[in-house]
Length: 350
Image 1 (cartoon, helix red, strand yellow):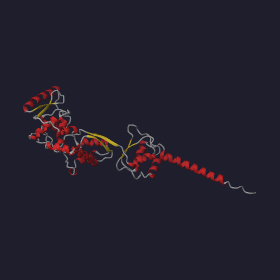
Image 2 (tube, helix red, strand yellow):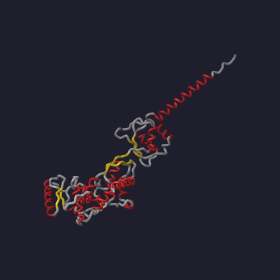
Image 3 (cartoon, rainbow, N blue to C red):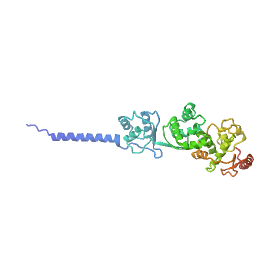
Image 4 (cartoon, rainbow, N blue to C red):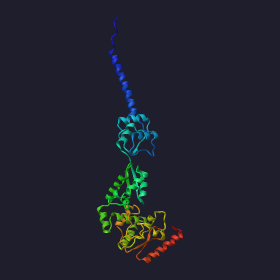
């Protein structure tokens, strides 16, 4: 009996079908590992994942597992190895969205395209306060900020010292990367400081017999004396009159700073006896550093101070926030008695 002829067409067709099926299976598996929506549980109000400096791949996996951010950690892990993310961990703050694929997420994390953090810096009294603000917004530890701003050797290369280092901070709203460290922060502030102190501002300061750091000190005192924009140039002019005549500044805000008690609303004679380089009732000239980070508005008010014969000022008895000015001490005493009587009437004793 003759054998049946082999049906090559059916054989090759079967092979083709098997190859297509296998390819389809591989494509489907690949789709779910690479391109299918994977990221989930991303909160609308906090869509960020934070990867600290020095983190390894195990830490990243732990974060994803803890927050249950991906459908399948094993798939993410496998693809991360294929894309060499395992050896390219970059710290930062990354914004995720639900429905991202593993590939999209890995590309984002591997690229280092992190979100920037907006920080409004204004009216900071001391380095400690600045450190607390930064550590609440960035990865940086508050202790490292305090340490750097008190490092005389480091500060010397920027022509600052431990008293005036905070004047490198020009109040404004800035963008930072979340993993900015203390040194990077200072260097960024120094760049902004140099931009702010233009040749024109420096010339204006020089005409007043001041440099940029001394302007910041005067401005910091004015900042704490009044919130009234139209009054700042007047008070700045009075303080400069005292400096030019060799008088003590006798600025109450410096006593509050020296006492390190910012709840004080009424300066008393006991405060005038505090032993401190910031006590302008005991010491001549300017204090060694600013008592806050003065606003740009106040710095410019000092540079554009109003010339007058006034040597004294005292808060108005109507508590409007404005001041009464005086040329002579007797005039000043009358104004002071009016304000003290108003304080007593309101029961403000400290």
